[in-house]
Length: 409
Length: 137
Image (cartoon, rainbow over all chains, first blue to last red; front, side, top):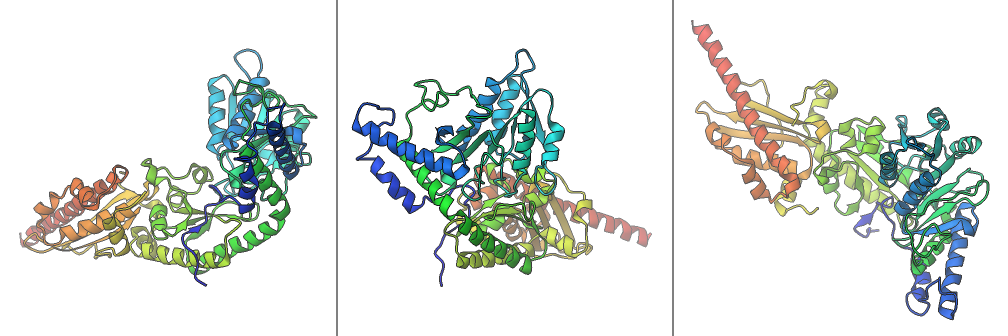
């Protein structure tokens, strides 16, 4: 069967909206266009009811109560609100405002708010993962201090898909009375989540990563044991329990809720299917090419993600050879900075392998035929590029590349 | 980012890929760049007794623009004297391949590789002449 091109394998960046989600949203653009905050007429009631249903759907996906869901514009906003909101609310008096623990391979939407808080007098510890990319509870425990007020650690990494010891880290924080936030953008909707059992106080996720619309996200804020309070970032109107002012994006929220509902019902089956396809992708590639490295822990990993380094070829040129396949390169060569991925660098993956890495993000509509096509393209491109790679030639001559003195440019 | 047709052509059909024996006195070899920076270019020239480049080969680890820049350089080098080859400017490569600003460094690297190959050839042939002179004496 001929595959339809181009093939989308960048589902960690964003996902296509599910048709069922779009269908659910449509009436709220036109007939049911009301403002959910309009309490005194039919239009407002309809909108509010739709938002309430979505809140229940979102809460059900993570084992929370509907009142614990705060609507936002996406994970970046959720992370900002959780991290800055909690730090500023629970800050100590004086110059030393408190300590925060996070990880060096978090998304920028966590790292940048932490950096901002450093300028406000907070002290931040950035943990480095081991070579497998996983953050353990033991690593976190070692970093905790008397004045630690917040731990923020992603559930699963966006580039390599590795999964951290969230439940154990949550238990540790709970025991010490420290707030625990997790950026669960890549995890929620793919894997079962229970904020009670997993000991989470604050959790961010986004609509467009779970086959919902862009521009809508949620923040779970624990209401009991403890009741978490956040200093808002926006002022005006006091919507969302005063934590996030602004008219609710009703259409977006309705779509978000539906997307959560579909994930809750289908994720077990979908996860199994994607894991099989992902494993096939990896075994078919490693079966045909030498010098291939799969980055991150092999098992403690999301079922849809694969990050592979192809030794002796450069990532951008590899992407050029498979232009009908949408994937992401670990190298940001196009940005003129020539900086390889900081995630791979912090894992201790050598710079040259970080430049040669590709992230595959499988999704709801990925087929086996597509995987076969992609494997063929990659194997062909890697061979084509190795034929013209001076590094491959040196490797074949038995030269250890790490001992070569390069003429640095 | 969209690549120009010429870059795509060089990427898909690279000219003069390969290697000469770098110990051959007729061959000049230039290797520039570093793997951790994302590009390494190896450019080799074969020079006749009259100082004219009779053949050129390259191998490149790098993005499509780096591959195209070195592939194009080998085409341009053939038939040129060493002095003419030394005058090849990166800006000419940029123009020929329509490289965007973020890819100018690829052309700079190709110019550096040309210069390094010429230097290597000259160093070797000077050393060879000194040796020959010593043998005659």
